[in-house]
Image 1 (cartoon, rainbow, N blue to C red):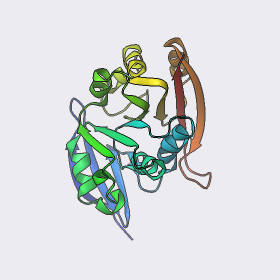
Image 2 (cartoon, rainbow, N blue to C red; image 1 turned 180 degrees about the vertical axis):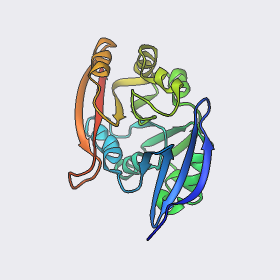
Image 3 (cartoon, rainbow, N blue to C red; image 1 turned 90 degrees about the horizontal axis):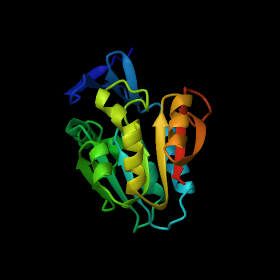
Image 4 (cartoon, rainbow, N blue to C red; image 1 turned 90 degrees about the vertical axis):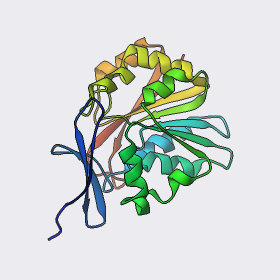
Amino acid sequence: MLERKLLGSAMVPGGTELHLYSHGRDFYIMLDRHDLMSTRMRYSEEQLAELTLDRLECADPHILVGGYGMGFTLRAALARLGPKGRVTVAELMPEIIDWARGPMAEVAAGCLDDARVTVQVADVSHVIAKANRSFDAILLDVDNGPDGLVRAENDNIYANRGLAAAMRALRPGGVLAIWSAGPDDRFTRQLTRAGYDVEELEVRARPNGKGPRHTIWFARPR
């Protein structure tokens, strides 16, 4: 019987400790006993990119992805973008990037070295706050969504100030797309009050229609 093997640990700034495990050919990033992400369930993170790109009208968008995670959203975006498209990845923890280039290099499949990709080891909220009409889409898969587990400061991304900053960072016609481990009616109302037209979809974690149900919000500034 295969056992999980600890490959690395990293402290979340102002938070707790994450652990990277392998189990055969699969990888898991865990917080305490919670599987935050794994290579076995990636479909909803891929759909975060796919469904957002379906909603964009520009030919060569500039996309902000926060954070990297296991790279599912980034790789799905790159597969759809043309040679002039661009992706900025904001990842708070340098260890996550190190894991992608190290033990998970086969999973990453060179996506971080793609010429269209810029990696910023930074809090995505800081990247958004400094932007001004810079992005055609902002794709957020930070913590577990608005009801986070990992870091209290992540709540600021989904607060009114964070939503206003995202609106300023988007170009006309842009989309703010947010992944969550589950639905949150309060957050849907908050997006609407913040001045967005909101579409909410439920997406399974696996392409065969099985696995947990995850939520993606697509929000367009009015």
